Length: 408
Image (cartoon, rainbow, N blue to C red; front, side):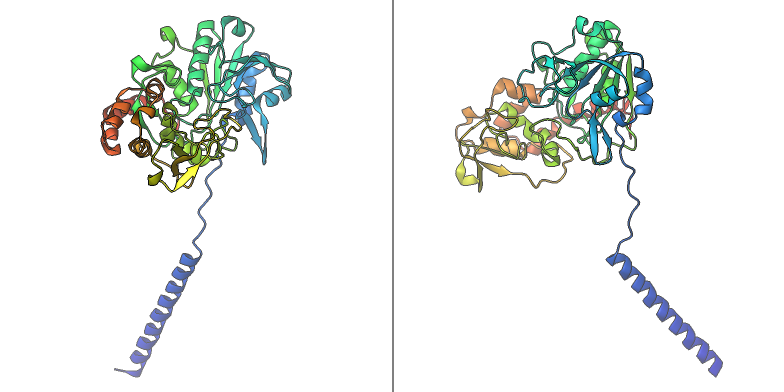
């Protein structure tokens, strides 16, 4: 081979080797220092979109349905929606308070009293006392009602029932209602047993699954569209949309939505552990790990390494199994859930020594939406077998749900 050809071949070989080394070095650098992906746009709650809804309220007499989650965010802080409206010279006439109250200090199920807000002097009308629906007299002086409450996407969480009854009252009285939308932290899936019509009540007024995968704004549209308001009435509804939200979005709630849902873990477990509310088993009330553990004194202590003692505390004045050693499971490290599971309630039932102590039948049916779930657990069906019985209803609901979705 001529010398020049040999030289060219050698140079080419060296070039290829160097390129390979540089490529490998670059690959190693990428592996060690993965390139940063573009951060997702920050979700903007509807309450922050003042440019949209303030013009609708100017010159109007306004009622507000709100609780501690009804805030406008700014920087690292927030201002309550009512305070924000007043600062913009909106004529707020009264506040309607749902379960747990306007300031959020009442126990679950505890009646909330009418009163006066000490910070604003505004009258507070309870929607979780003798009345759960605004009366005609209470709406007479109002031109519009604003609804802004953080939901967690579980049927027996009572704020969607409050939404329905407020919409119903507004429809009956010809009062427009504006829903300021917020993300649903459990909005990324649909699962669980569907409410049977004959068992409908405040823990579930409509035939929807336990986890329905909709925001308050989307659900409000469904209430109107499906004719679920009394006598088929339709409210004069406006939904102010979220920005940069999809149903796949993970959303950290900066304010606990109620006293016994203190963090993201409790919220992701709530659809599954909330069913313990219809049993005698403690689900963490009376501890700092509400809906992140379960246990009871009557469960077999030999089957569990974990134990705790519930005591009265913020949000739970008289917890189940108060002062007793409860044997059960700690679930406080559970990652984000994508389904409802019966595994834990089945585990608790199987390890209850006296099965007659387990279910509070009426309460369990109201939470489950059907008496079938209790029977299935008592018959020894597995989690997978139980979940298979939900599928037909879930598919029917998903088709209805599609009509009202605002977000992908």
